[in-house]
Length: 191
Image (cartoon, rainbow, N blue to C red; front, side, top):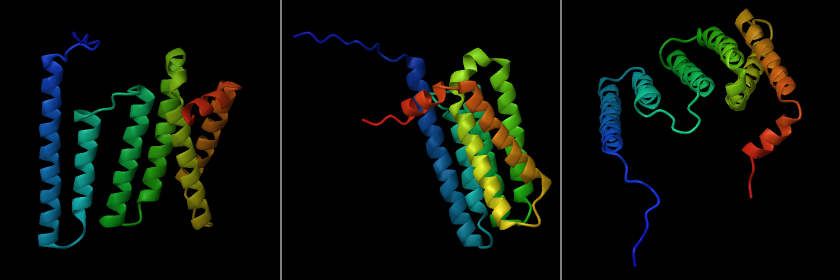
């Protein structure tokens, strides 16, 4: 009996790239473990968490990028989320008190940038709106939490991020109109 293979044999270049990714993953894991060990031996603040997150960011964004949904909007949102997590880690573990303003600036800057990316090539990018919607919801929830916790001392960056996220969500609903319900059911379809 002869078996007919429907998939072609992977090219040598693809196999070499996978091996290089694996070697880099091992190197990054060793560096992360080494930084944790050094931090434990030296003592002090937990700077190794920041180093490990930085290693993860470099690996995830450059060496092993997304294979599915690799588009401008998703990558911009991914970089923004990773950067905000890094800023919050630095704020909580090393120097406190400044992350709220910086994260808010990053959030509303990325919302503006992603909207520009969406409208510069709307016909191709309109199918990639889900990361924008999710990021706008995350920004809205985060800004709301800051509003609740800091009733009197809310800084202008939080107000701008809050209002811009509401505007982006309304804009997405207007653009998608009746397709919004269909898109959401396609995304969260469960049998």
